[in-house]
Image (cartoon, rainbow, N blue to C red; front, side, top):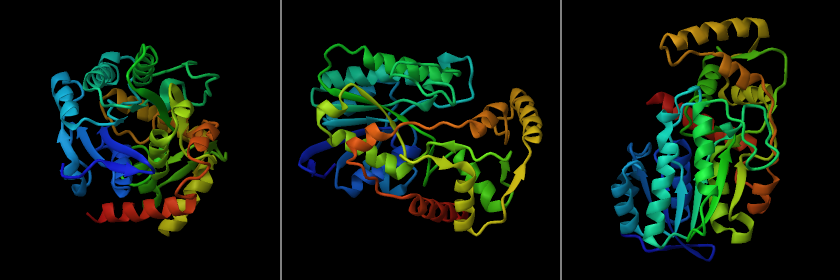
Length: 337
């Protein structure tokens, strides 16, 4: 790196990002670089954006020696841990998700040795609880998948730290969408653009969601916040106002100038979901609708985002109109490639 240590709002920062080639990671790297922050992204895959390649080093968080050497060479002041093994539909195979537990241990041990790290943001998941359940406190867990359980175990590893040499914060992103998105929301935008999106039932399902560039801002706000506001705290991150799923789809449709959205009776959707379950059982991983996905679509969940908004000073960079416009613009460019 040829950059000098960056100063942002009075705080010197060198940020070590894990998983910066992924969806949230790509947007966070963009956000930090846009504020002249020195950073390195370690990931097992190359960056999604070619502009990020000079900030990238291939490294697996499961390879402790490589991870330790990379951290020691870079000497970060802050760490944003986004790397994870995902797979929300897996029910029982917890061993599949060792990066979410052993990877967390490796990162902590490496940061303990380097001595320069002031703060780590650990990324957990909404799925530490079943869809629709609002936990009563930070450790009120209720996972229903192996992925969710692995994130619970990862959180416990962090919470059980004894006098670590760094501050730490846990975040749980909520239904994230926006540029560089992956399933399920890339399929949501694709279906609307091609005219085969069906709104299920007649409900106006309300849910908390998060535009990814706003979440990038929230993550960075945590790094800048006083310790008493964020140390040992857990935050749901996303947009403070819940969205009506039908109204959200309509807004996307209008920005895309896409065909009219039709509605599908719930009983028909349930039958399609059962077929999807069978196809998934038979090995088709991209079934368009499963019982898991149907439950996710039709379940309302609204989280209190006031704690993270307090950390952000009550403001986010993008409103819903602008967020949809930026996402549609990215989607169209991606579609032309």
